[in-house]
Figure 1 (cartoon, rainbow, N blue to C red):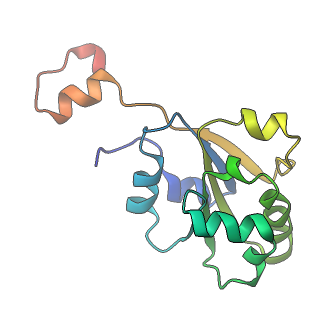
Figure 2 (figure 1 turned 180 degrees about the horizontal axis):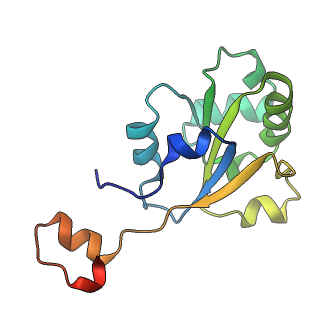
Length: 142
């Protein structure tokens, strides 16, 4: 696990967030390591995806921690209406991950009208990889 600058627990103290970034940048790994007590709904799991596809309101029937992560939210934009309702009604905080906001925007999804901010996780830079490997990094990386 590489140390990332993005402080998820700190961000989520203020407001819910969409966390976007290309596939393979480590969004799920970062979440696992920095938000161990969060309820995680992984829409890449086929069974989970099918359950929520049939009835997105199932999320309101679960026992949820104060921070709820919905991983790969772009697969099921309809769930954002329930997220909106739970932010307003129960004061829950959500971290909604995806590889790109394009599918959400194109589909006219509820982007939570200011109830959630956006953050991006970028791939590791060469400086981070060199320093993790114990190699000398130039002063440009500092």
